[in-house]
Every structure is written in structure tokens, then in C-alpha cells.
Amino acid sequence: MSCLSCLCCGKWSDEKGTGKGRPGTWRVFSLKELHSATNNFNYDNKLGEGGFGSVYWGQLWDGSQIAVKRLKVWSNKAEMEFAVEVEILGRVRHKNLLSLRGYCAEGQERLIVYDYMPNLSLLSHLHGQHSAECLLDWGRRMSIAIGSAEGIAYLHHHAMPHIIHRDIKASNVLLDSDFQVRVADFGFAKLIPDGATHVTTRVKGTLGYLAPEYAMFGKASESCDVYSFGILLLELASGRKPIEKLSPTLKRSITDWALPLVRQRRFRELADPKLNGDFVEAELKKMALVALVCTQGAPEKRPIMLEVVEFLKGEANEKLANLENDDMFRPDKPVADGSSDCISEEKNPKP
Ligand SMILES: Nc1ncnc2c1ncn2[C@@H]1O[C@H](COP(=O)(O)OP(=O)(O)OP(=O)(O)O)[C@@H](O)[C@H]1O
Ligand SMILES: [Mg+2]
Image 1 (cartoon, protein in one colour):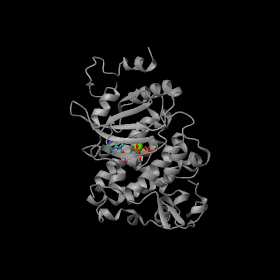
Image 2 (tube, rainbow, N blue to C red):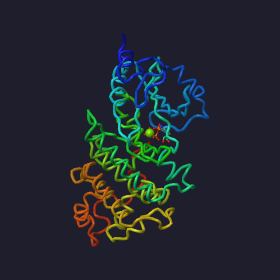
Image 3 (cartoon, helix red, strand yellow):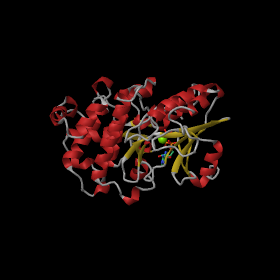
């Protein structure tokens, strides 16, 4: 019996073989079933493409909607690791994490199946197909901030084994029909065999979210996720992209834009203009302060995700007030104090 079929008979699988798993269960899908659910991976079903492959919308015979990620890189050697890792990730359950519904491993094909999230990603609301509709009022933004922080804190501090996300960004923050957050693609980098090119691609593709020590030395840790989460918070509050193009050769990071405004206590100017001034200023201020302490260059100065949750939920207001008095927020601190003020094209990694 192969390792894959062992797992298929495990306690997370569809034990009765009905093809319809219990809610919250995990099972192995056949390639035939996924072909039929996605109309043979039809282009019209494609939700998008990331560093690891394409994602397709599909519908199972019981009417439930799924998203199927079809991995583009694979090697036979890694079959065992794939099954084990998927099984570990499939066990992770939290209200703010997009759990795996199952996987398919037949021949050269490796596919991962998730629940479909009807409100797509935070990226689509901030900068993509839903951005004109302005569906993210301030209340929803606060709940997205808290929910995604809780999901990541669960990965870091409660999941067994602990999981580092490695790719926190707006396209991996998905929204269900009630705009509840589901953080996607946690631990995903581990599913890809060594030697595949995705790591390089991903480092280039999401440069704006990468902690400096990860970008330079490729060393992933919980505090790298904290950094990326800080960038995500600034993006959520301001509606700006992590890196803004000032001219064809000059770029500015969102932190280099936000930090001087925070030092001068000009918090209102940080708010997304799409909010039309309709936001809670104290909460916006909290989001900005937390975001900037998360994106400090020195990893040991960043808070852990459990503290971030406390800050955002207003459970550590005294600590937050102390943070506001931190040296990094001194109003008289010069703007260019060693942080990268602007990024010139030449300094970026070559594609
Ligand atoms: N379960 C889902 N429901 C709805 N949309 C989804 C789902 N999973 C992924 N998507 C969307 O499909 C697109 C492709 O996702 P994918 O994860 O492959 O790429 P990405 O998130 O842009 O980058 P990365 O590969 O680094 O995760 C993204 O826009 C993503 O938000
Ligand atoms: Mg993704």
C-alpha cells in the first residue's frame, strides 16, 4: 500500500467512500472528479495564477463550490513528502484559516482542494476587480485585521507542529460570504520539492512584504510573518500598495510613506480615501502604530502575533501607549534615518 493510500484511509478521509466528506473533514479526490468539477480546468473557471500554479473554481456533484490549486512543479521523488505535509496542513482548523478540503495525487498531477471563498481576496477589494464597489467599510477592515492576526497567531502558537506562513499578503487573505477572514496558503512553501524554482519567483513576486532578513538570507521565522502582517495592515488602512512606483525608476515602500506621517501624528492622512473620512480615528491610529512596530528592521524588536492580537483587540492599551512613546515615533526624528527611503530600480533583484 502506498503512502498516499494509507493517508486516504486515515481518520480525516471520507471513511464511507461516499465522496461527500463530513463538514471539516479532509479526503482524497480523484482526478476524474476534479476534471468534472472544473469543466476540465476550463480557462473560464480560472480564478487566478500564483507562484505555485493556477487556481480554478469548481462545483462538486453535491453542489458545493471548491477552489482547486493545480501545482505546476512536481517531481516523483517528493511524493511521500507531499502526502505527509498535506496531511499535517489538512489537520489545521481555525475559524480564520482556509483549511484544506483534500488533495489529488495521480500521475504527475498534484492538486489541492479548498472551499471556494465567494468574496475572493483582500487584494481584489483593495486593488482588483472589486475595488470600485467600496465594500470594505471601516468595521469590515478592523474585523479583517483582527481575524487575520488571530489566524496567524494560531499557526505560530497553537498549531502542532507550529507553522510559519511565509507568504502573508493580500491575495492570501480570503473573504467568505460574510466577509469573515480565511487566511490561505499557510505552510504552502513546504509542499514544494527542493530544487523547484518557486522560492526565487515568490521572493521576487512579493518583494514588498518580505522582511529584510528573509529577502537577504532566505531565513524564514515567525517574525518574518509579523513583518509581512505589518505591511498588510498598512495596506488595509490606506488602500495603498506595498510598493508604489513614483517614477519609472523610483519606488517607495508603504512603510517609508507611513512612518513620517505617524511621527508627525498626522494619522487621518493615512486613511484610504475610499473611506470618505468614515472611520474610527483611534482605531486607525492603533492599526498604524501596530503595523509600524511589526515592520521594524530588527526582528527581535517586533511583537509576537499574540501581542498583535491583543493590541488590535484593545486588550493592551497601556502597552500600546508606551509604544507610541518609542524612539521610532519621535516627532523630531529625521525622516531618512537609515531606513531605505526610496528604492531605486537598480537595487532590486533582477527578474
Ligand atoms: N479558495 C479560494 N476561493 C477564492 N479565490 C481563491 C481561493 N484560493 C485562491 N484564490 C484566488 O486565486 C488566485 C490565485 O491564487 P494563488 O494562491 O495561486 O496565487 P497568489 O495568492 O496570488 O500567490 P501565491 O502563489 O504566493 O499564494 C488569487 O487571486 C487568490 O486570491
Ligand atoms: Mg495564494
